[in-house]
Length: 314
Image (cartoon, rainbow, N blue to C red; front, top):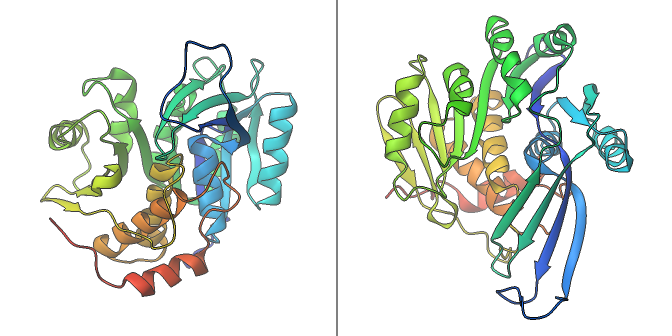
């Protein structure tokens, strides 16, 4: 952890909600019958939920800026964050309610997501309060909430390191993501919609003026990509013996948590930080419908010692 006078190591800015994971017992839905038997589990999730609780589980001082509804789901999130040691001074109310996601989960751990962002397109925040919270942090990790783009120039002016999760980009020219690309020092995205991430990487680099921009791309079972202005490296996926893949929700969020924790707070190399990020992501895939059992610092270091320097570049 950094030796500074900041009250927080990281502020997560963005999305938290209650996820409902629907686990199928087969690889398809039988639309010829009215009822299908499944296992249905609720938990505190979404990108901001995974990231906030991921940083907190690793022992970092974490704050959250975002919105919940004045409802039972919002109460569940508030209590969960408080119990996890996450500062919720920046937690506001959305009159449309708490965000929800329905995740159809298949036996191999893959999913189809149905996301209800409630009022995130129109919400306004107390910018002075947000500025105060951001000023107390070393890092701000942004999700793609529409209101959160207003905090990007504030964080930049404060000298806070900015990471942005662009999630699963569909359109390489999507204007919604422009602000997040422009202000970021670190960018994360999923290549699920692209067989070759290099075109997306180059497009992002052309839109971001930071000469030290670092881009990390999650490729699931194919591993991940780390891109700087000078080069693009591809890293094979790692395997954690005795930890089967049962749920891929949150893997990309924890890739970011593990990398940023190692690189920014641990002052480790890019290569070692990528491996720690991959360990966090892969461990998350072994957890069923929970953000309360994400990897701890001791568990991460144990896996690190076991795997050593065995990240292999293609």
